[in-house]
Image (cartoon, rainbow, N blue to C red; front, top):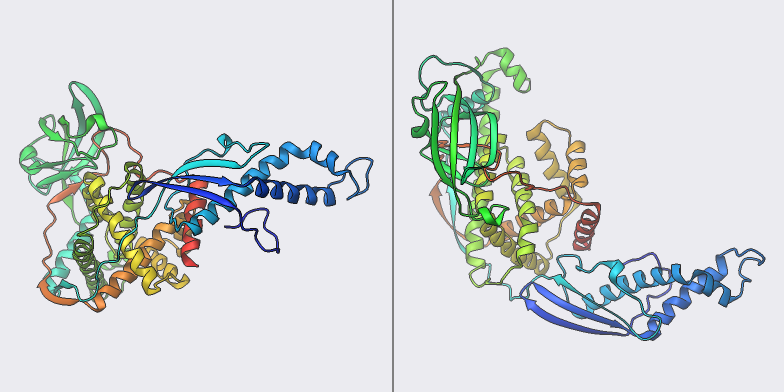
Length: 488
């Protein structure tokens, strides 16, 4: 681990006394003691450099008395020595004790005291990758989805695209499945409003989902409504909502119907085809739609294979994962899913629908994803599977092709949000999955394209949340450093 004191000279090996206590499969309490000889050495090194280079009034450079240098700069040097000792001792302890940290130490640097006499001692808690024997991953039995897309499949996909460009008009008469309602939403618990939406446009489908709950039979609830009607129902919040006091609670939902709308599809003419991407004719457009369907099936093939692989590899992965680690990882798991879906050509509506499922089962899905990650990362290390720059270029290019944004803009956004390590994990894990699939024994099963029965709303019922928070500069640096170390 490099630091500001590194020079071309050989790094000094510190005399350390390291005590590691296991608090759980993924948690360690570590106490590090650095000898006084090492502390004095670091002070001497700093003062030697200052004496040679610091200009002191009344003395030529390099001629000021050592004691004067020490007295004048003691406080500044002490802080620098403390920081250098912590960085160097952490790196050496991790290497000697074979500690694979997956988080930064939880101590506050300003609270650590460097004594004037005796050894330098500090302690901290840290999350680590669990230790385990890599399960047998060769020759697994897996199902492989197969499907020959028909013109009817393409027709349905074209209609979905038409729908996304459609316009809404007032409908005379009552609402029916497939229509849209504009409604005021109110969600209450024991008479207290948890959240509201003044004007939410919702398509009438069998299921209505939010971040933290879903309403089954929504089409029956609002069937036949007209403006001015009120519909009420009860729903149960997920056990993974941010506020622990709301988990599993039954909430009153009120829909004040403001308008009823019907969908008017655009005509597929030359002007419409040009607006979609400069298509010259319907045949070219349908070819691209077919390619997108095939790419989405490949994504589903990959995800189905991954679920089967994970189920078999994590049978004995009964590690207890720290709640704080799960909480932090939830946003990263959501971001990983977004990257996967974006590169595979899914629409915003489809992405929201899948993310709502993940959010409603956040803790369980995150715990499973973490266990998968630990095992797949271990296989990658044992097989020498690494990421390359071209991998990142390909991922970003695919996301850019789907979003219509430039690759440069997408790369910049990922880097600024501190999510390059999420992209790295996605790349490594996909490579490992492909490696496992090379030796797998497959049984072909038909891929069934299910009709859309869920309307997904991109909001929580339980109140404001920060699902994917902005990453601090410190966290971003830590994440990028971890990713860089993984490349070495």
